[in-house]
Amino acid sequence: METCDGAIVVNMVLLVILLGAVALDIIIGEPPARVHPVVWMGKIIHLLEKHAPQTNRALYGAAMTLITITPFAIAGILLTRTNHIFAIIASIYLLKSTFSINMLFGSAKKIEKQLKCGKIETVRSELRTLVSRDTSYLDETKATSAVIESVSENYVDSILTPMFYFVLFGLLGALAYKAVNTLDSMVGYKKPPYQQLGFVPARVDDFLNYVPARISALIIALVSNNPATTLRCALKEHIKTPSPNSGWPISATACALGITLEKPGTYILNNEAATPEPEHITQAITLIKKAAVVSIVAVAILLL
Image (cartoon, rainbow, N blue to C red):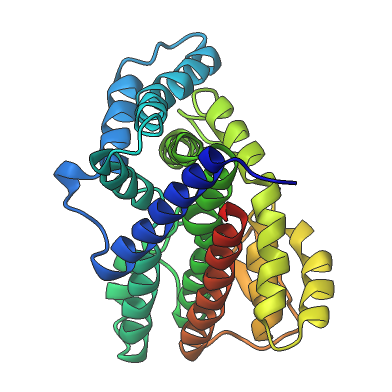
């Protein structure tokens, strides 16, 4: 089937935006907070949360979701209506804000170094920026597990899913997803006072990550040393997590590396395998980097 010239131009522009955003992330990393779109999302969410009513909180949470998405969705729509160089540069910047390859791997590597130096208190403090669990009691093994789990889960949240929706809906899709994901990370908890307020954001985030999470397990298995064994193991282990999505990348990573990953009191994945050690963080980073490369290449091919 022939493709019209206009469609070719649009796809090439999208490809330039994708590759430009990836390059910007890898070379420069995160922009200052005052000009970071995700920080802007966070400020909108915080403002809305401050004015949350004590009744009809689930309905208000749904409204928060729409309000948070809207300005970024409008920006995505407006920027994709022109191929002007300014619009392309702005699109590259905004798309880059939806994923954080550089920061994810850099943070994990930093914590690995601290673990190897025995700085467990520093590790516990640093981990609070990566995981939502209580880190105050974590020993070396459980801290190592938390880092690897975070790298695995954030492969979906911070790399694969934004690109997935960029392919489907362009910049609008990536920005809308990031707004929902940011909202979920701030209010999507099951404990008071968020269980009602965060209900809709959490369910929407689960829905948006449903397909990418399962794709992530396939990709992680594909880049592992033993794809068939890793995939079979992940298919068995992923159901042990309460989340419908996070179990897929985390279990695939545990199976690929041949280690046990545990969130105390919540789940133990691949529990007959070896205990994770700080050196496994480097292995996890390498594995997820390979998965990220496959994801980027696949998205680029789909945009051609």
